[in-house]
Image (cartoon, rainbow, N blue to C red):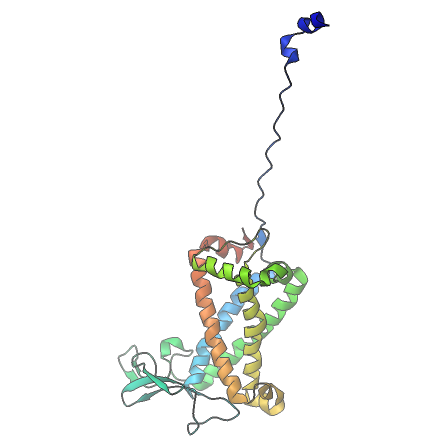
Length: 285
């Protein structure tokens, strides 16, 4: 037996090398594609919202005071007012008055002429005071705004955009997860969980804008309309009066502009070309 073992080739007695398993292929981040309906609505809604905001400021110039309740006039106390006193412009909120000369209430136009108006011409549509034209601009683009939102929601329910990209998962509602996302954003860290298009804070923002703020703009717009109020009084009754609806309309309009500015700033600091490509040709990684 010993002679047999000795006669064997020494190389044959060595253990066979164990081959290491091949490395797993890298897991690529899913390629989230925005549907055509989403991309179209995004840009149409952007133009409509900016036009509505600027024409709305001109409409506000006709009576630059806001009230709560059903009625409001210059003899009633206003919770917000923009005006001028003498040669000084002011913004008054809740009784506290700020001097805004040169910006609001009293300012110099492009030709050096002093104007007494709540918002300057460069921020309004049209630039010169014209309430009738402002209403035409406002109501025309309101159709694009309202029906664009309706079609976007319908298409998003069918193509899975809401379910796959915006819907919050159960774990994302936890306060700890939300707080961690807020801290990450403060550090300009915008990472998302594997397989997710957006992080919890982004999802909450889009849910608040698409399903709360934009519909409220439409409903409050109907509630403050004299024609709608005469035909259907319940929209204004929902808010406790036309003036309350007007105040909410004004607050949400500025909140949406603030969201747009923040959204644009975050796009600039975080992969602007990638995100722009995602909202134009449809792909983003």
